[in-house]
Each structure stands twice: as C-alpha cells, then as structure tokens.
Amino acid sequence: MSETRVRWIARVGTALIRLLAVTWRMRVENDADLRAARASGQRVIFTLWHGELLPLLWHHRGEGIAVVISEHRDGEIIAQIAERLGYATVRGSSSRGASRALIGLVRALESGLDAAVTPDGPRGPAHVFAPGAAIAAQRTGAPLALIRATASSAWRLRSWDRFLVPKPFARVRVVYGPLTFVEAPSPREATEQVPRLQAALDSIAVD
Image (cartoon, rainbow, N blue to C red; front, top):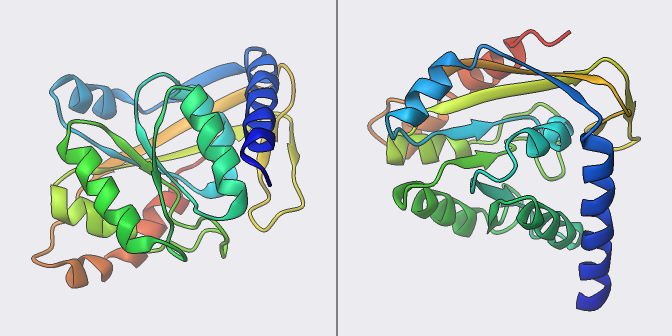
C-alpha cells in the first residue's frame, strides 16, 4: 500500500472516528488513584485488551501518551490515526520488533511520558498477556494502569479480538483497576507475574 493511500485512509478514518465518538456518553469509574498518581508526576503504563482499543484511544486523546503500535501492514494506518488523536507512537509488538518496542516504551517513560500497551496485540490470542508490559514496569518502576471499556450498544467486528466499536450515542463505560506495580529483581522474574496481571485485567468488572 502506498504512503499516499495510507495517509488518505488515516485522514478519513480519523474523521469518521471523531464524528462517531463525539456522540458517545462517557462514564469513568475508579480513576481516583490514577489521577492522583499523574498529578504527582508518576508515569504509568496504560494496559488494555486490544479489542477495547477504540473507545480508550478516544477517551485519552490529546494527552501525549506513547502507544505501542504493531509493525504489521495495518499498523501504519493505526499509528497515523493515533498520532492525529494526539498520541506519540512506538512501533513494534510481541510478535515483531519486540525488543525495539520495549526499548522505545522504556525511553518514552524515562522522558516523562505515560505509555499504553495492548498485551494481547496485535494478532492475539485475545486476552493472553504477553510479558512486554510487565518487563517495562519492572525496568522503570512505572505501575500498570489496568483499564477496560464497554458500551451499552456496539458493533463487534469479526476479528480475532472481537474489536469493539460503540454505536452512535452509546453509553461507554471506562473502568480502571488499581495501579499495579511489578516488583521483581530481573525481567525474567517479572514475566513470572504475567498470570497475576492477566487475572487482574480480566477481573475489572465491565459487564
């Protein structure tokens, strides 16, 4: 796909997202600890399932968060849309460019940005937590801000992650779990905490 076509798709896609998302009625729950941490200068790693990416990208738009985006072909379109919504981007994933993505994620946090990752992206399996977020948290001391989203009415794409697209005028719930630190002496031991982190993200009540 040519660069011109990618830019055109990203431009149109961003416009469509804005037209749809301005109709959503957002409800945010359990964000007091997150707001206090950010107000104190604590950097966080937003951690969310790939299928819930769209409403959460909209909710945190314009905050300059560094989001990890896949290097797969479709990733360039998503990266350009994210940048148009006010995000910085770090390229890579658990399946391609993983080391580069982790380095970029750590550098973003050390530069004073928050970061965001989808630990089951970009190709799944859905709700299976890859270790990159845990390693970044261990290396930087930044807690994971676990976050989920749901909608009162939505389309679900026929994709591996059942990608959530809230319908016009849907009530969108954004729910945070407790800030979760990964205290481990080494990256290898940080990965041993992945089952705990996956369970914590799945346990956030959004239904």
